[in-house]
Length: 123
Length: 123
Image (cartoon, rainbow over all chains, first blue to last red; front, side, top):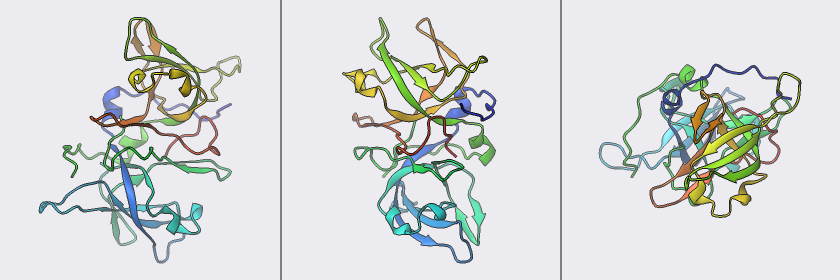
């Protein structure tokens, strides 16, 4: 049975504060001097002020699950997209990848099916 | 480009309040007098006080996407699991299925891969 201590209950409004969207990983780079982190370039179909489609940089501590990180390129998966920007290793991370992992090494990203457009929000 | 208005920024602690776990749908029933709702019986590997494995009832407004709702039985997908219980149609819903949908009818559940045990939390 699940030994985890239950979290406090939350309201629907607490949940609704969290924006989670489908993004496509366009590029992956290792971070020098970090064994854990990968630098992901992720498209959410967002535009900058000039209307140019502009991906985000998202740093993620998932390197150990992807010895060949190139397999991540092209994957559509879920991210938290409204976290405060976070400085890490001299870069700024603008989101967080959503994943499931267990103590004994199982790991999964959350990949919506192919029909879901980039930028779609979970609800 | 994505026309949605950005949500307010949140802290990591705001995100961490939300518990999202993988559950397996054990049974699905239509709700009498509701065209939208399905009654899902979902296992999260939780036990009651006697140690008996006890699934939850979760009501979900996804009926229109599943004309044959039996295809949901056996699916492992993601749920918000620490919302306040919510009375609906004379039943009590103890969670919310996580899904992505678009105005033009695309729909996807979020299904982790097979190696992820029931009850595992997203983080």
